[in-house]
Length: 449
Image (tube, rainbow, N blue to C red; front, side, top):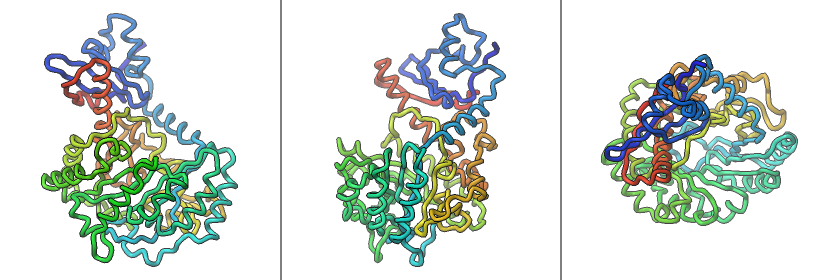
């Protein structure tokens, strides 16, 4: 049997003074191990193996595979198996597309005054549609989205009370946070398990990007976050950074701001999770036929460096990255966006576009929809920039909509995020297994196949 290193191996060097071990992770098999330099030599060149046990260990972990195996097709098949065997109904419900803010980068556009809200009749029809299709599913996952969903609290309350009795029900809320304090007690009572709120960084940008009647809403958002802590909810804080602000001054301002927030300190900080995301004003024009601006590259690089340094202060969770069983709502066969008028769609970025509609709660899903088929037939393993990447099983090309409209993969590549999580996990495992305290962890062989 001829063997070769798996395409999906990622190797990290772990050093302490004159000692070195290696942390190996296989993203397809979702396996990991700490090995020494002798075993690393066998991994790179299987013919060097001196005993059968070494080969069996590396084969069992998926680090070595038979030479003729097409791992890329296995990856695609495994992904499809997970996608189509998942029997959870996923709904992103938009009770309104209206918003109480006018964030200048919003891909839904700035003027939302003409958008309608979900009325009682549509709420009732949605509940009726869910009850009609739920047989055969193991549960239902609801994400409340908008616009600003809390502007139509009546719809959230009505639908939640009707659907929360379904076995396997779970829910989350994405909000700008301005109204959180008003509804903090009711949110957890409705079975909502997590809340995502966005802050602008550096913090002084709130005065120009997140305002109401010309005034910054930062204090309102922070009070809202404070109000829901301690209620058993996970709080996800998305930090929006204009790539033009990715500089040393902004980094210091951001870190100082976050370290002063009481809810990120000590035990309370365990309820809160931080992520950082780039603001890209050109997003809102993509659906209108605009091309990706190539001059954006320099700004992207500055953002990545900002993120890397930010994570040295606020590390990612020390968890082993897992295989991404569905890129997003759009590629999941049992997932839909539900618009205020009852239309069904696939992609979050296309909720204000007619071409994003694939059916309705009144007429059902249109299985002949081109929009539906292009997302369900999406294949990240054929993407030129992704198909040989060892991180592919944990990423699958990131945003499927961007890949389908030819936005370069580097724009939302998850390499830094995944390697960051892997590094923290390796650090944790080496500390636990070997008792090491002061050591470095560095990607050694990113393209190992």
